[in-house]
Length: 152
Length: 152
DNA sequence: CTAAAAGCATACTAGTACTATAGACTTTAT
DNA sequence: ATAAAGTCTATAGTACTAGTATGCTTTTAG
Image (cartoon, rainbow over all chains, first blue to last red; front, side, top):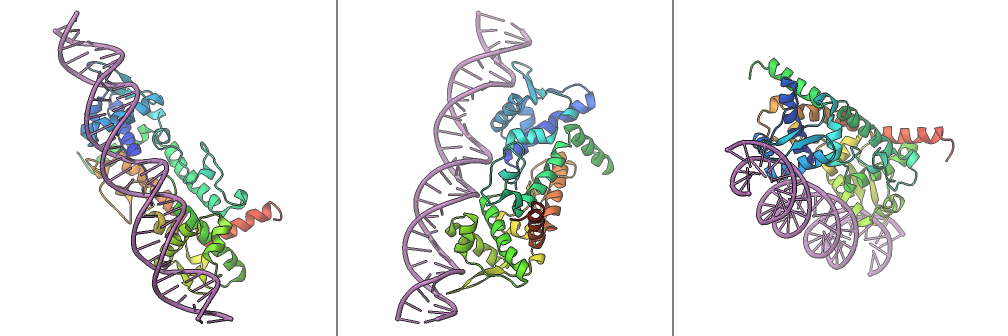
Protein backbone atom coordinates (compact mmCIF):
# COMPACT_ATOMS: atom_id res chain seq x y z
CA UNK A 1 0.00 0.00 0.00
CA UNK A 2 2.83 2.35 -0.63
CA UNK A 3 3.38 5.52 -2.55
CA UNK A 4 6.30 5.19 -4.97
CA UNK A 5 9.26 7.56 -4.87
CA UNK A 6 8.07 8.80 -8.22
CA UNK A 7 4.75 9.72 -6.71
CA UNK A 8 6.27 11.15 -3.58
CA UNK A 9 8.73 13.37 -5.41
CA UNK A 10 6.13 14.53 -7.88
CA UNK A 11 3.72 15.51 -5.14
CA UNK A 12 6.46 17.31 -3.23
CA UNK A 13 7.49 19.23 -6.32
CA UNK A 14 3.93 20.25 -7.10
CA UNK A 15 3.44 21.46 -3.56
CA UNK A 16 6.69 23.38 -3.76
CA UNK A 17 5.46 25.04 -6.94
CA UNK A 18 2.14 25.87 -5.37
CA UNK A 19 3.58 27.44 -2.26
CA UNK A 20 4.95 30.73 -3.59
CA UNK A 21 2.11 30.87 -6.11
CA UNK A 22 -0.30 31.11 -3.20
CA UNK A 23 1.44 34.08 -1.72
CA UNK A 24 2.02 36.09 -4.86
CA UNK A 25 -1.21 35.12 -6.57
CA UNK A 26 0.63 34.63 -9.83
CA UNK A 27 1.90 31.27 -11.06
CA UNK A 28 5.44 30.95 -9.84
CA UNK A 29 8.16 29.55 -12.06
CA UNK A 30 10.88 27.33 -10.64
CA UNK A 31 13.75 25.42 -12.18
CA UNK A 32 14.29 21.71 -11.79
CA UNK A 33 17.58 22.27 -9.99
CA UNK A 34 15.97 24.64 -7.57
CA UNK A 35 13.27 22.15 -6.60
CA UNK A 36 15.67 19.22 -6.55
CA UNK A 37 17.97 21.03 -4.20
CA UNK A 38 15.24 22.14 -1.86
CA UNK A 39 13.55 18.75 -1.71
CA UNK A 40 16.73 16.67 -1.85
CA UNK A 41 15.82 14.81 -5.02
CA UNK A 42 18.03 13.64 -7.86
CA UNK A 43 17.61 16.36 -10.45
CA UNK A 44 17.59 13.94 -13.35
CA UNK A 45 14.94 11.77 -11.80
CA UNK A 46 12.86 14.81 -11.03
CA UNK A 47 13.25 15.90 -14.62
CA UNK A 48 11.44 12.79 -15.80
CA UNK A 49 8.72 13.21 -13.25
CA UNK A 50 8.04 16.84 -14.09
CA UNK A 51 7.99 15.95 -17.76
CA UNK A 52 5.29 13.37 -17.13
CA UNK A 53 3.27 15.93 -15.21
CA UNK A 54 3.73 18.36 -18.04
CA UNK A 55 2.56 15.86 -20.64
CA UNK A 56 -0.45 15.19 -18.47
CA UNK A 57 -1.28 18.87 -18.61
CA UNK A 58 -0.71 19.67 -14.96
CA UNK A 59 2.43 21.71 -15.53
CA UNK A 60 3.65 24.14 -18.13
CA UNK A 61 7.27 24.90 -18.83
CA UNK A 62 9.42 27.51 -20.40
CA UNK A 63 12.61 26.58 -22.19
CA UNK A 64 15.86 28.46 -22.46
CA UNK A 65 17.62 30.90 -20.23
CA UNK A 66 15.47 31.89 -17.29
CA UNK A 67 13.08 29.04 -17.99
CA UNK A 68 11.48 26.58 -15.62
CA UNK A 69 8.22 24.93 -14.64
CA UNK A 70 5.00 26.40 -13.34
CA UNK A 71 1.52 25.15 -12.53
CA UNK A 72 -0.78 24.86 -15.53
CA UNK A 73 -3.77 25.95 -13.44
CA UNK A 74 -4.38 27.71 -10.14
CA UNK A 75 -3.41 25.59 -7.15
CA UNK A 76 -7.04 25.43 -6.14
CA UNK A 77 -7.88 23.49 -9.28
CA UNK A 78 -5.21 20.81 -9.05
CA UNK A 79 -5.91 17.90 -6.74
CA UNK A 80 -3.54 15.40 -5.20
CA UNK A 81 -5.58 12.70 -6.89
CA UNK A 82 -4.78 14.04 -10.34
CA UNK A 83 -1.08 14.13 -9.61
CA UNK A 84 -1.10 10.72 -7.99
CA UNK A 85 -2.85 9.05 -10.91
CA UNK A 86 -0.39 10.45 -13.43
CA UNK A 87 2.59 9.13 -11.52
CA UNK A 88 1.38 6.03 -9.73
CA UNK A 89 -1.67 4.97 -11.69
CA UNK A 90 -5.01 3.92 -10.24
CA UNK A 91 -5.84 4.55 -6.62
CA UNK A 92 -7.61 1.22 -6.10
CA UNK A 93 -5.74 -1.39 -4.06
CA UNK A 94 -7.06 -4.13 -6.30
CA UNK A 95 -8.01 -3.92 -9.95
CA UNK A 96 -11.55 -5.22 -9.62
CA UNK A 97 -12.56 -2.10 -7.70
CA UNK A 98 -10.73 0.39 -9.88
CA UNK A 99 -12.75 3.09 -11.59
CA UNK A 100 -10.12 4.01 -14.14
CA UNK A 101 -8.56 0.60 -14.77
CA UNK A 102 -11.08 -2.08 -13.96
CA UNK A 103 -10.10 -5.69 -14.48
CA UNK A 104 -11.71 -8.83 -13.11
CA UNK A 105 -9.81 -10.21 -10.15
CA UNK A 106 -10.53 -13.87 -10.72
CA UNK A 107 -12.80 -14.59 -7.81
CA UNK A 108 -15.63 -16.99 -8.62
CA UNK A 109 -18.34 -14.41 -8.06
CA UNK A 110 -17.40 -10.75 -8.08
CA UNK A 111 -20.77 -9.53 -6.87
CA UNK A 112 -20.47 -11.35 -3.59
CA UNK A 113 -16.70 -11.37 -3.12
CA UNK A 114 -16.04 -10.22 0.42
CA UNK A 115 -12.55 -8.98 -0.30
CA UNK A 116 -13.84 -6.91 -3.16
CA UNK A 117 -16.47 -5.28 -1.00
CA UNK A 118 -13.93 -4.34 1.65
CA UNK A 119 -11.35 -3.10 -0.83
CA UNK A 120 -14.04 -1.05 -2.52
CA UNK A 121 -14.48 0.80 0.75
CA UNK A 122 -10.75 1.39 0.98
CA UNK A 123 -10.59 2.68 -2.55
CA UNK A 124 -13.40 5.11 -1.91
CA UNK A 125 -11.84 6.36 1.28
CA UNK A 126 -8.53 7.05 -0.43
CA UNK A 127 -10.08 8.63 -3.49
CA UNK A 128 -12.27 10.80 -1.29
CA UNK A 129 -9.25 12.35 0.33
CA UNK A 130 -7.03 12.61 -2.69
CA UNK A 131 -9.67 13.98 -5.01
CA UNK A 132 -10.95 16.53 -2.55
CA UNK A 133 -7.60 17.92 -1.52
CA UNK A 134 -6.16 20.58 -3.80
CA UNK A 135 -2.66 21.96 -3.78
CA UNK A 136 -4.13 25.14 -2.31
CA UNK A 137 -5.61 23.12 0.54
CA UNK A 138 -2.21 21.62 1.23
CA UNK A 139 -0.32 24.89 1.32
CA UNK A 140 -3.05 26.48 3.39
CA UNK A 141 -2.83 23.71 5.91
CA UNK A 142 0.93 23.94 5.95
CA UNK A 143 0.92 27.58 6.85
CA UNK A 144 -1.80 27.04 9.43
CA UNK A 145 0.38 24.49 11.18
CA UNK A 146 3.33 26.83 10.93
CA UNK A 147 1.37 29.59 12.55
CA UNK A 148 0.19 27.32 15.32
CA UNK A 149 3.73 26.27 16.12
CA UNK A 150 4.65 29.92 16.20
CA UNK A 151 7.02 31.56 13.79
CA UNK A 152 9.43 29.89 11.41
CA UNK B 1 -1.22 2.04 -3.85
CA UNK B 2 -1.74 -1.58 -4.57
CA UNK B 3 -2.32 -4.71 -2.59
CA UNK B 4 0.26 -7.37 -3.44
CA UNK B 5 -0.76 -10.81 -4.68
CA UNK B 6 0.60 -12.15 -1.44
CA UNK B 7 -1.79 -9.95 0.47
CA UNK B 8 -4.68 -10.63 -1.82
CA UNK B 9 -4.30 -14.41 -1.66
CA UNK B 10 -3.80 -14.38 2.06
CA UNK B 11 -6.92 -12.34 2.65
CA UNK B 12 -8.92 -14.56 0.33
CA UNK B 13 -7.73 -17.67 2.11
CA UNK B 14 -8.55 -16.27 5.52
CA UNK B 15 -12.02 -15.33 4.35
CA UNK B 16 -12.47 -18.79 2.92
CA UNK B 17 -11.49 -20.28 6.27
CA UNK B 18 -13.87 -17.97 8.09
CA UNK B 19 -16.87 -18.73 5.94
CA UNK B 20 -17.75 -22.25 7.05
CA UNK B 21 -16.59 -21.43 10.56
CA UNK B 22 -19.34 -18.84 10.75
CA UNK B 23 -22.03 -21.31 9.86
CA UNK B 24 -20.93 -24.18 12.05
CA UNK B 25 -19.73 -22.09 14.93
CA UNK B 26 -16.67 -24.30 15.27
CA UNK B 27 -13.30 -23.50 13.71
CA UNK B 28 -13.24 -25.16 10.34
CA UNK B 29 -10.15 -26.96 9.07
CA UNK B 30 -9.17 -26.79 5.41
CA UNK B 31 -6.21 -28.07 3.46
CA UNK B 32 -3.92 -25.93 1.34
CA UNK B 33 -4.94 -27.75 -1.81
CA UNK B 34 -8.57 -27.25 -1.07
CA UNK B 35 -8.23 -23.50 -0.68
CA UNK B 36 -5.86 -23.21 -3.62
CA UNK B 37 -8.29 -24.99 -5.88
CA UNK B 38 -11.27 -22.96 -4.79
CA UNK B 39 -9.51 -19.62 -5.06
CA UNK B 40 -7.41 -20.46 -8.10
CA UNK B 41 -4.06 -19.90 -6.41
CA UNK B 42 -0.77 -21.74 -6.88
CA UNK B 43 -0.71 -24.22 -3.98
CA UNK B 44 2.98 -23.72 -3.34
CA UNK B 45 2.69 -19.97 -3.20
CA UNK B 46 -0.27 -20.28 -0.89
CA UNK B 47 1.77 -22.58 1.32
CA UNK B 48 4.26 -19.81 2.01
CA UNK B 49 1.52 -17.33 2.71
CA UNK B 50 -0.34 -19.55 5.15
CA UNK B 51 2.91 -20.36 6.87
CA UNK B 52 3.56 -16.68 7.42
CA UNK B 53 0.08 -16.24 8.83
CA UNK B 54 0.66 -19.19 11.08
CA UNK B 55 3.95 -17.82 12.37
CA UNK B 56 2.18 -14.55 13.04
CA UNK B 57 -0.29 -16.40 15.22
CA UNK B 58 -3.37 -15.86 13.08
CA UNK B 59 -3.65 -19.47 11.97
CA UNK B 60 -3.08 -22.85 13.57
CA UNK B 61 -2.32 -26.00 11.68
CA UNK B 62 -2.37 -29.71 12.06
CA UNK B 63 0.20 -31.91 10.32
CA UNK B 64 -0.22 -35.32 8.81
CA UNK B 65 -3.15 -37.17 7.40
CA UNK B 66 -6.38 -35.26 7.79
CA UNK B 67 -4.47 -32.17 8.74
CA UNK B 68 -4.96 -28.62 7.55
CA UNK B 69 -5.25 -25.01 8.62
CA UNK B 70 -7.80 -23.31 10.82
CA UNK B 71 -8.28 -19.88 12.35
CA UNK B 72 -6.37 -19.33 15.57
CA UNK B 73 -9.21 -17.24 16.96
CA UNK B 74 -12.90 -16.68 16.25
CA UNK B 75 -13.51 -14.82 12.99
CA UNK B 76 -14.87 -11.91 14.95
CA UNK B 77 -11.50 -11.33 16.55
CA UNK B 78 -9.36 -11.32 13.43
CA UNK B 79 -9.29 -8.09 11.44
CA UNK B 80 -8.28 -7.46 7.87
CA UNK B 81 -5.69 -5.06 9.20
CA UNK B 82 -3.90 -7.79 11.11
CA UNK B 83 -3.73 -10.01 8.06
CA UNK B 84 -2.70 -7.20 5.80
CA UNK B 85 0.18 -6.13 8.03
CA UNK B 86 1.61 -9.62 8.24
CA UNK B 87 1.69 -10.01 4.49
CA UNK B 88 2.17 -6.53 3.10
CA UNK B 89 3.68 -4.62 5.97
CA UNK B 90 2.65 -1.20 7.19
CA UNK B 91 -0.56 0.39 5.99
CA UNK B 92 0.90 3.86 5.65
CA UNK B 93 1.52 5.09 2.10
CA UNK B 94 4.71 6.80 3.22
CA UNK B 95 7.04 5.85 6.04
CA UNK B 96 6.94 9.14 7.90
CA UNK B 97 3.28 8.59 8.80
CA UNK B 98 3.59 4.94 9.72
CA UNK B 99 2.64 3.88 13.22
CA UNK B 100 4.40 0.55 13.12
CA UNK B 101 7.42 1.40 10.99
CA UNK B 102 8.11 5.10 11.26
CA UNK B 103 11.07 6.53 9.41
CA UNK B 104 11.82 10.15 8.56
CA UNK B 105 10.98 10.93 4.94
CA UNK B 106 13.66 13.52 4.36
CA UNK B 107 11.58 16.64 4.10
CA UNK B 108 13.19 19.71 5.67
CA UNK B 109 10.51 20.08 8.34
CA UNK B 110 8.30 17.12 9.11
CA UNK B 111 5.95 19.03 11.35
CA UNK B 112 4.81 21.30 8.58
CA UNK B 113 5.26 19.04 5.58
CA UNK B 114 2.08 19.26 3.54
CA UNK B 115 2.48 15.90 1.92
CA UNK B 116 2.93 14.30 5.29
CA UNK B 117 -0.25 15.86 6.61
CA UNK B 118 -2.28 14.66 3.64
CA UNK B 119 -0.79 11.17 3.67
CA UNK B 120 -1.47 10.97 7.37
CA UNK B 121 -5.15 11.40 6.58
CA UNK B 122 -4.94 8.66 3.98
CA UNK B 123 -3.22 6.31 6.37
CA UNK B 124 -5.86 6.89 9.01
CA UNK B 125 -8.69 6.33 6.58
CA UNK B 126 -7.24 3.03 5.42
CA UNK B 127 -6.37 1.83 8.90
CA UNK B 128 -9.84 2.78 10.11
CA UNK B 129 -11.44 0.45 7.62
CA UNK B 130 -8.97 -2.40 7.83
CA UNK B 131 -8.72 -2.43 11.61
CA UNK B 132 -12.45 -2.24 12.15
CA UNK B 133 -13.43 -4.94 9.71
CA UNK B 134 -13.23 -8.49 11.05
CA UNK B 135 -13.42 -11.69 9.06
CA UNK B 136 -16.87 -12.16 10.56
CA UNK B 137 -17.93 -8.78 9.21
CA UNK B 138 -16.76 -9.80 5.76
CA UNK B 139 -18.58 -13.11 5.66
CA UNK B 140 -21.68 -11.48 7.10
CA UNK B 141 -21.65 -8.88 4.40
CA UNK B 142 -21.07 -11.50 1.76
CA UNK B 143 -24.12 -13.48 2.72
CA UNK B 144 -26.19 -10.31 3.00
CA UNK B 145 -25.36 -9.43 -0.59
CA UNK B 146 -26.11 -12.98 -1.64
CA UNK B 147 -29.50 -12.81 -0.03
CA UNK B 148 -30.24 -9.48 -1.64
CA UNK B 149 -29.43 -10.84 -5.07
CA UNK B 150 -31.69 -13.76 -4.28
CA UNK B 151 -30.50 -17.31 -4.00
CA UNK B 152 -27.22 -18.73 -5.20
C1' DC C 1 4.96 -48.98 7.63
C1' DT C 2 2.99 -46.03 4.48
C1' DA C 3 0.55 -42.38 2.58
C1' DA C 4 -1.06 -37.79 3.25
C1' DA C 5 -0.40 -33.62 4.79
C1' DA C 6 2.22 -29.52 6.59
C1' DG C 7 7.04 -27.48 7.11
C1' DC C 8 11.19 -25.49 5.32
C1' DA C 9 14.91 -23.83 2.35
C1' DT C 10 16.33 -22.31 -1.84
C1' DA C 11 16.60 -20.97 -6.43
C1' DC C 12 14.91 -19.12 -10.64
C1' DT C 13 12.46 -15.67 -13.63
C1' DA C 14 10.29 -11.40 -14.72
C1' DG C 15 9.11 -7.20 -13.69
C1' DT C 16 9.57 -2.67 -11.42
C1' DA C 17 11.94 1.28 -9.13
C1' DC C 18 15.29 4.21 -8.98
C1' DT C 19 19.36 6.17 -10.64
C1' DA C 20 22.78 7.50 -13.98
C1' DT C 21 24.58 8.87 -18.50
C1' DA C 22 24.58 11.07 -22.84
C1' DG C 23 23.12 13.81 -26.06
C1' DA C 24 19.56 16.52 -28.92
C1' DC C 25 16.75 20.33 -29.11
C1' DT C 26 14.95 25.17 -27.86
C1' DT C 27 15.11 29.66 -26.20
C1' DT C 28 17.29 33.83 -24.68
C1' DA C 29 21.05 37.20 -23.72
C1' DT C 30 24.78 39.39 -25.55
C1' DA D 1 25.62 34.44 -34.61
C1' DT D 2 26.96 32.29 -30.77
C1' DA D 3 27.10 30.50 -26.25
C1' DA D 4 24.73 29.54 -22.24
C1' DA D 5 20.82 27.81 -19.87
C1' DG D 6 17.43 25.06 -19.80
C1' DT D 7 14.09 21.44 -21.29
C1' DC D 8 13.35 17.02 -23.94
C1' DT D 9 14.36 12.09 -25.00
C1' DA D 10 16.36 7.66 -24.87
C1' DT D 11 18.82 4.15 -22.90
C1' DA D 12 21.16 1.43 -19.74
C1' DG D 13 22.18 -0.52 -15.35
C1' DT D 14 21.56 -1.98 -10.69
C1' DA D 15 18.96 -3.56 -7.03
C1' DC D 16 14.94 -5.08 -5.17
C1' DT D 17 10.40 -7.47 -5.18
C1' DA D 18 6.85 -10.72 -6.75
C1' DG D 19 5.61 -14.81 -8.11
C1' DT D 20 6.60 -19.44 -9.12
C1' DA D 21 8.84 -23.84 -8.85
C1' DT D 22 11.63 -27.74 -6.87
C1' DG D 23 12.98 -30.83 -3.50
C1' DC D 24 13.31 -32.66 0.72
C1' DT D 25 11.88 -33.23 5.82
C1' DT D 26 8.64 -34.01 9.57
C1' DT D 27 4.40 -35.37 11.52
C1' DT D 28 0.37 -38.24 12.01
C1' DA D 29 -3.66 -41.41 11.00
C1' DG D 30 -4.65 -45.83 9.79
